[in-house]
Length: 64
Length: 405
Image 1 (cartoon, rainbow over the protein chains, first blue to last red):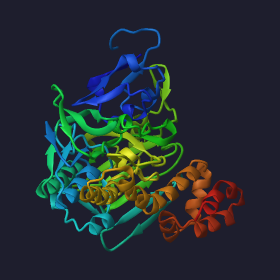
Image 2 (image 1 turned 120 degrees about the vertical axis):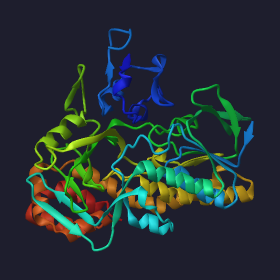
Image 3 (image 1 turned 135 degrees about the horizontal axis):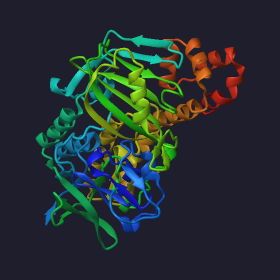
């Protein structure tokens, strides 16, 4: 499960461009995450230029 | 319920160009853009070559142009640089936030309708065919809009194109992840500056794009597969760390201010295989029509927008929006821009295999003229020169010559 720290997001949509499952979409002025589609692949974490996405494999609750 | 001849998703350079020409030709065009204000956020270096704009007979107003560019300076890992300059303007660094809006306004002036802050949420299918899109203004309840032709000019995200069956997902190998500051003050000579080296920017480079009033876009792009940062236990590319290091080591920049932080992910791979299907086409960065060497997409998007508008008008005249009628756009693009992009991709893949030491040798051997040849896609001469002094590079560089058509 990923979490996005929205306050640091620069809205570049890089995460959604590499997401193989359409689990992150741009919604108006922020990125919207669909947890049920996420497969924990971590591609969005690797590519995020702002470093605001993190992946937690063990926990499912809220933002860090 | 609203009906149009064509609905374009995305009011960037591709979408607005296509809308302008199609509307001028008599089509009823709706362009939607998810952003609250067109042109914002800026996600790129803002460079644009002069040729494409002149070819379209566009007179870009002053406020869209930050500064004129007269040439480029390319710097090797050891600091040696090659410079080429022209007496006339070879391009501009734009103010994208004004440029995108102006291009959109041009489309409106020709009769297109644009809706900002409006997101296409899904395709509408009727009898198995694409018939329209669901649109949502500011996240409100979606409404339907119908058109026999839907265009994805969505840029990197390309979510609707995916829903239409196009494989627009990017592989990590085929993206560069970028970070950029707008900085001041930086004394420049109106040259694009590019800094190479595996310590500076692995599989990429640092760029300094001059802007007006002693400003500059200082950015970095590195391969998406590379790892130099630790993101909560996940290794990942962190371009900001490397960019900050470059700035700290640069005499002029280390004390300069930052006026804006921005970043993004750039497509540097091959275009998608197909751009068209019945009632749908993909144009610009959504179709990965991006230069794999410098990651520039504005010029290619505008070129493709012109070609796509051509087939849209043809389809409109024939009242036939089938894949066959739209196909000439794809064929023409692959024969023209596509050839150029393919050569650049080859060059990018070869560059990846070259060490800093090799790069230093290459920069020592070639001249500004050679560099120009390389950028034009004529590799044979410069490769022969480089390999002559360092035969061990033959294996890495031979692909450029063998792959040359």
